[in-house]
Image (cartoon, rainbow over all chains, first blue to last red; front, side, top):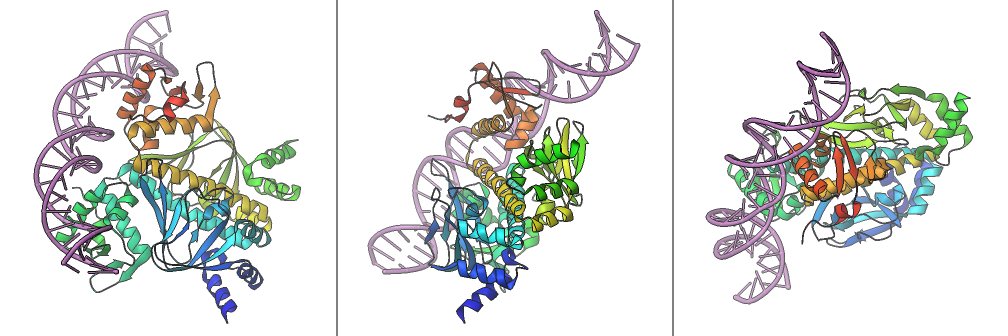
Length: 230
Length: 230
DNA sequence: CGGACTTTTGAAGTAATTCAAGGGGAGTGG
DNA sequence: CCACTCCCCTTGAATTACTTCAAAAGTCCG
């Protein structure tokens, strides 16, 4: 049965951890399923933050663009993660764009609907605090890195994070399980595709990574953790 | 009376916006007042995240330090803001250090106590979501800036943010109302005190800012918003 | 098999750091 | 009240990590 299947899936997710069957049923009832093809945009920077989405499968990318057209990748979103947290936090417009990078399935709620859900079931609200809290913490780590570390190390740590979030074990190492260009990596760590290309070439020579067109396999994670100096 | 005074103060704060008198009383009852002198540390990076604090008056600074000793200022905390959000989000250790930069008064709750407060009063939980959400958003803005903008612009925007958060109107312009060294500014925007010093000197010559020892007054905010190029 | 995108690699340029040295202010203690 | 000391700030010069510019070589897809 479709409905109970959704409810099972919801109960697995951080946001609904420990929620009562009743709360889950309510959540399921208020939510709408949505399918997206790779490349489609879920919403765009500046759109009204009318709803929020839970990723059930697939992968999406959250980006932000400056007034002069420079883009930054805020993060990739995988199963169990939330897209459009703004609606949850009471913001009025989406601060960034979210685009599917693989075919994806989501469940969406209206901002008002979800806020009501949180009021009626405080478990969901406290879970939401934990979920955003984790993301905030992640952001702090990146900020620290971006402020203090050299490019090479930033690229390394970015790849490690991606491998951890979306890594697939293979014979050669941990493969990042979605298409990822040099440009994408650059936009995640505040550098240029040229620098990323050079760095990856050097690492490939040392057998640390193995990469192709929009594809990266991390072979020796240790080497990326290690200090490049001394 | 002391208690009702505290309750009044709490009711003014974002975190307790719209909370019932009962919830406020409970919050007040579970909380402990704390006074801090300028320079004292509230907690240090790596400490167990046993409690969280609401700033009632004064100002504190949240920093993070890398393994090789480089420091970054995550943010300054003023009245109404939360120090130690980690306890709220379920983390086990504080990711950074919080230090008073002015004499300050706080109210503190145990992590468990506050989580119970959120469960019993979902208003508080939904407020917490909004509060952290705002901070997360702020972080995104800084990340974008740090990744894409030149130092000069970053320094400018950092000063504007500080002026907005902690500005005091004076005859000469908006004065940042707590001691702020060149080094501090540098640690907020990922540069060195030398570069900050040079930039401020140049701006002082143009009458855009007016600064002294650990003191900055923004005279022409417009000039800092403006694009330094073309 | 043409065409669009992605990647590579060299060479030149530059923004900002690092290195280095000296000059104030504010508080302290004689 | 003056001298001493500790920070904090300033400013030049040298260095460098990274970008920008430029061009060519792959690679995928219809």
